[in-house]
Length: 252
Image 1 (spheres, rainbow, N blue to C red):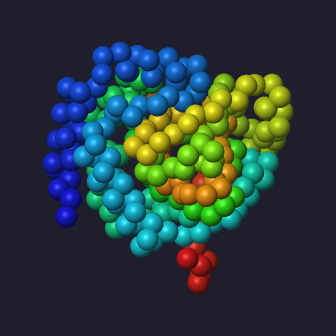
Image 2 (cartoon, rainbow, N blue to C red):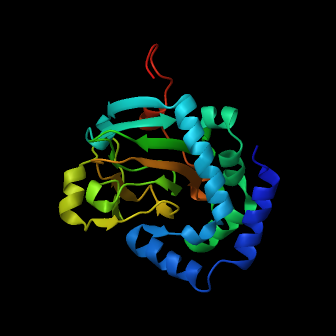
């Protein structure tokens, strides 16, 4: 049984004493330029290990296969197994505790250069995805809220896909997403990832996807956070509500 209080103390002590000098400033520059930044320094190994163990357990207990496409993102594919926020909150303890941890929020605020808040729309607070079959992908999309912190639990080598691609400085028109137009007008940046990595992304202004996997698996926890302006925003949640909906009867 994981002692969440001990993990919270480990996280607080790590953020206070063990973040490398200059790491926050360097990540902030990357976030501003590329729309994403590795922030693997944000948590100690004890927290990463406990979170990874919970992810493995929850995928086995509650993971649901999805194969969807959305008009709002030019019908880009979502092929994966996932676990919803409600299932994680009901069955787990580590992910929900880490998500709400004040030391982590303060560190993300430093990197972002603006306040980072818990997401007011609960289904986007934390979700698990697992790309497990050849061709599985989380296709090109934007998110409604400003920030996502992604914890990489498992990832294949870059030769087998599973890396992230980003197009920063872009915007989402749900009625006319015109994703191919974005590609010819903006550069695409790619980020190689390894188990234990964390990265922060400005997901509402960074078109992004996970390159399809071919061999191996990619398991992550996505934690969604809001900017101050998001808190007074009026959002619709078409893609999120469909992607994380309850599974049809008999589907596992």
